Every structure is written in structure tokens, then in C-alpha cells.
Image (cartoon, one colour):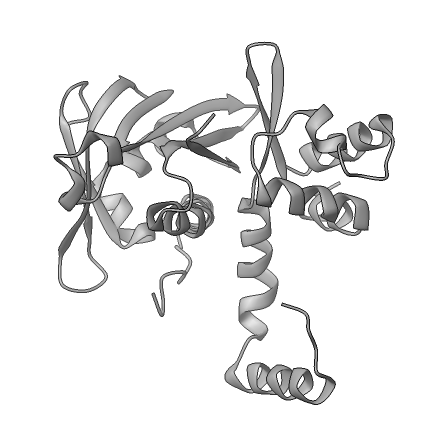
Length: 149
Length: 108
């Protein structure tokens, strides 16, 4: 396996539907991620990740590969400058399953270039996003995890 | 046991922290690969991995007939958010710097 892969798992006291909505609707992501994820989330569609913690800035783009709400979503991930260069695209998979009264969210980020800046960025980014998402859905308060970014 | 208690208990053992360090350096290892270079029996490694999985610090995925192990840093981040960030201040950072200068601490 030449490309790198990371897996992140968190259990959230919420339904899979709420978790899926929180990951895909900009009015939610803005509140705990300081970013808007914008797409119709249909296979083949484009998605955009806009940072909203300062001047609104397009930070990530990609294409939807698979979509089966609220259980599964697969999309590609690239900086806007690498959009035309598929060799630099990585891939993100969300899997959401109900476990008792919790939802188990697994984020798999693979097809990453070993040693790349992107790999460094996502490996500190996802744990923050998932901790903040969990706090947001369980308590209504996001973590001030982006302060000083 | 509450989830956070499982995480602290799992982290309280040096062999388990060593396994997490190995998975941090290299994700996606099999049990056999994890046992290499470790002075632990395969059975002991397997038991430690079970405790780490129970605390959600390690997650596994089947790849054909191989079970691959990945470090899941999310619970550690939750500890940071809950137990470390709120006690952090510039003053604590300055004390730590002073301590490492005085002691010539080579730790990272």
C-alpha cells in the first residue's frame, strides 16, 4: 500500500440522520467547523468547503463518489489549485451506523500522499472536527477548537 | 465503566502506549506486524489491542483476510478539550520552558 490512510471513529448521542445532516448542511457545519460544506451530495456532483472563520475562502473541493444518506457518503478531496490534477486527490468516506441510542461515525481518509502537507493537515484537523461535532450535537455547543488556527 | 474511564485506564499502561506510538508512526498494521520488534507475546499484544479497541483508541478494518489496526486519536483529543485546554495558559507554558531549560530535558 503506497498511499496513506487514516481512520477516525466517534460515538455521538444522536440519530444517524442528525449526524448526516450535521456533516452536509452548511448552516450546521458553520457552527462547529467554522466552514461550510456546500453540495447537493448527489453522485458526480461537486462539493466545496468554504472556510468561514475569517474572510470567506474556498479551501477544498471534490466530487461526490457515492451517496446513501444517512449511512454512507464518499467524496474526493483536493485543494482548489490541485483540482485539475487527479493524482493529488485523496478520498473521504463517512460511515454512520446506529449503535444502541448512539451513532457511530467513522471517517476514513485515504489515497493520501505520504509525507504531504495535506496529510499533516488532515491528521490534526479531523480529530478537532469530530470532537467539536460531538459536542455540538450532544450539548448544542461547539468547541472553540479553531481559536488560534 | 464510562467511556472516559476506559480511555484513561487504557492509557495507563506503558505497553499499550507503546502500541499506540507504533500505530501513530505507521497505521494499518496487522497483529503479526505489531508484534515485530516488541518484547511481548502475541497473546499479550492481542489482549492490549482488545483493551485499546474497547476504549475506541484503536479501530480495525478487514482488508481481505487481514485485520488492519489504526490509531484513533479522537478520544485523546476529547481529553485534551476537556482536561488540558482549560488549565493551559501562557504562564504554564513559560514554567514548562523554564523547567526544560534548567533540567536540559531532552523529551519532545
